[in-house]
Amino acid sequence: MSSNFSQEMDKAMAETFGEVCFLDCIPSSQNLQEGVGQVLFIRVFEPFSGFIEMYLPLEIKKLTIENIHQETWTDILPRKIDDTLLEIMNILAGKFLANLTENSSNYRIGLPQILFEQQAPGVDAKVHLFHYDIEDHLAGVRLVIQGDRHARTGG
Amino acid sequence: MRLDVGIGEYQVSDDPRDEIKTYALGSCVALIAWDSAANVGGLIHIALPDSTINPDRALNQPAYFVDTGIPVFLNALGKLGANRKTSYLKLVGGASVLDPDTTFDIGRRNILAVKKVLWKLGMGIHKEDTGGDMSRTVSLWIMDGKIEITNSGRKWFL
Amino acid sequence: MKILIVDDSETSRMITKKCLSICGLEDSEFFDAQDGLEALQVLSQTPVDLLVTDLNMPRMDGFTLVKKIKLSPKMAPPHIIVFSSLASEPVEAELKNYGVASVVHKPLTPEKLSLALEAIHVK
Image (cartoon, rainbow over all chains, first blue to last red; front, side, top):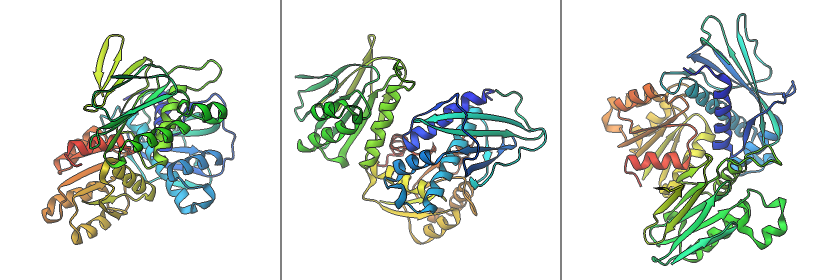
């Protein structure tokens, strides 16, 4: 299994936003400011216990929705917006875990959810933060690995 | 006959004797279309993703940009009888060449822009040979739709 | 051609249908299901030529769907393609034992689908 979480998450983000939304996503040295509203969340069960959260500002959500659906933001039902963002979270998690496990072992995730606040990492959790520039808009990802099933190393 | 395509140009043909060729694709992309039923094909060599940076150039040379070039290219193919249902689209180029004036990878942006425009038109790429850091020269033979890519003496087909 | 698309995400079903159209299957008759349970209901009433299914779904996931189809040859489509964010090599091997022709990593793109369809000689 790869031990470079940062590299694998960077690759997963670039592939997800590139292949699904046709948006260029690159790592950023700037931090996304707190309080971005909705949190896209997905639980991970294998190869570790934890979760992934993604924070997307409104501008990225708009670009994403409009590129995929070819409709203007104001014309799309909120239900459809949520469904699209959840699917992006699902794809990101799958790509990240596939990259991490080098596609050679099973990985299990829950169903993606939209939450209104970050989840508490829990005692002894390892937290990794990643920041991205998606065509001049900042996005963030938080990877939380919980309990005694941490990956052996992380970066 | 060989039809050479420069940067910001395109060629379409229904003559089975023709070879359409473009050279040294770095960050530029070549979108190649081939309709096996009509025996019509074409190639467009595009430099940049977005024409809003230079609308005047886009007016005079629409093929220089993804957003203005692709519609013009597809229209030309249609006039020769190419049908979307029986056509294949392939993409070559978009190598990573960092522009010193920006922080983004123009090659990757070109690739994404092509796919975005095609998706909007209900179309997509069936095969691609893109990215990396090498320059590619590519030829399309109208006789059979064969696409040959070369780089530093190596040759392969898409 | 009759094609059943199974995924709990409406967005994913839309993308799949669009990719199938781009790959030349735009004249097909498309059926939707949100999970394995709904898919079985559709299959019990309508024989389809191609089943394209996700794995990670509520109520009944794609693994269970594929296993149940294997046990019911009468409703089994001739071709099954799985597309999923959970498509690791061990998963792919297991699915192929259940008659799945092709396993594709999400997101589905015209290029990936084109390869999968070529492999099963569809289109």
